[in-house]
Image 1 (cartoon, rainbow, N blue to C red):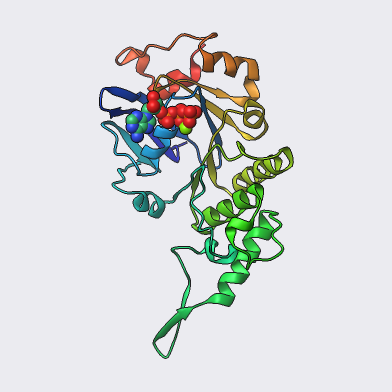
Image 2: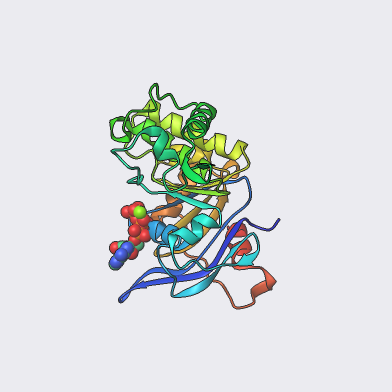
Length: 268
Ligand SMILES: Nc1ncnc2c1ncn2[C@@H]1O[C@H](COP(=O)(O)OP(=O)(O)OP(=O)(O)O)[C@@H](O)[C@H]1O
Ligand SMILES: [Mg+2]
């Protein structure tokens, strides 16, 4: 199957620091891919390359099989990649309904005069939140008045409204209570059921095992292993993250004709 997204040999330098050192990463359609690794492993940097915030110093990126490079985040959004940053980037002093359509307001025209299609936007916002089982009693409250879990739900509804094929979430449950975290995990499952792919960055291995199909482990700026969650165990992933269980795979040039991604997946 052609991956929805495929990165090969991505390098990102910050001065003398190699934040990404030939990182490989792939996500299939309708797949939840977890991205794990220690602090500083390069996860957020990799995500910022994918979403067009950073230009890589080397490497290639393919979307639906075609080479792409994003000069700005808007280009990634237009290509169907929505990123939910940890800080969420919601407009605190705007209503729930307005946040969902922020930057993509629906416009009606009457006698050539444009005006906001408020009723349509509101109905669509309600439908999206219902679909995601996000309970926000009053869509007119400001986003900053919502709980952490409601805010995550709103950010995910907004990503869904962008009609993205790939939704990237950087630590979506880190600041949440157990019940709200569970809800966010449910949102992720919902997205996959709707045919979307999700990249989930998390330090919570339980969360990863609950919702992900596969997990990519990063260390020192590179992906060192890809595992199918159903065929792995939390202890194995923790061992890979800390380096206790695994040495970094070496990729011989042209070795056995396998791609680096295939080697990552078959290694061990
Ligand atoms: N804008 C930047 N300028 C300089 N160095 C950076 C920048 N962003 C990240 N780095 C460095 O690149 C490395 C990778 O950082 P990154 O934020 O990608 O790690 P991470 O895996 O997301 O870690 P965490 O789990 O703590 O969020 C780190 O050594 C970090 O200090
Ligand atoms: Mg990070």
